[in-house]
View 1: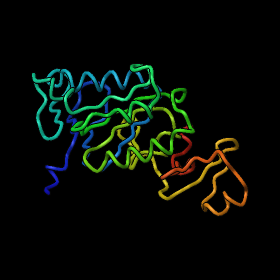
View 2: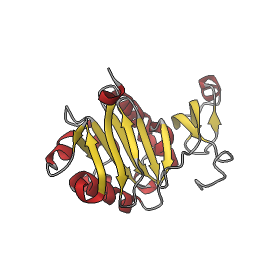
View 3: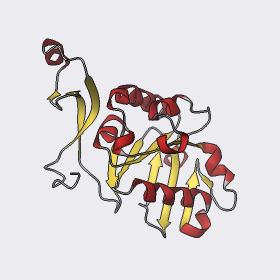
Length: 204
């Protein structure tokens, strides 16, 4: 399959505050922001009125212009505030053929004990589509994303691997045997770890 056919979402030269992005099938992209609501609102503007707010917006290589139904048809919106439910429950209710999953959630809306199941669902959904996450939660990003940007399109360094974190103390174990020996019960499994030093502490 060609690279073009792999593209789930492309936002080219937006005129409002939002990164220019190309999101391919099989990937989860995160955008870190302190203003989750504002950036999420701008995303809705881009998929609902693309001709007004960007040079070009495509979903599944279909150009969004006046046919805004395309954006709504292919996008599954995951918002605890909007649906008054948890991220996990909203993800579980994703309809088929919604190839772009859009998650926007604040730190307060992230349940750490659900992150492992959220991570598994994201991995499953990426097989047929892609995921975009807008948040200020490092925990949510570490459980889900492959690439992380800030609002100005700068990439935030991630250390890849499999990490086990004690939810109660924040201590990270690199090996599951250590976790078992320590008899820890509230464990969060992370697919990446945000390296504070590499990012000059801009995340905190």
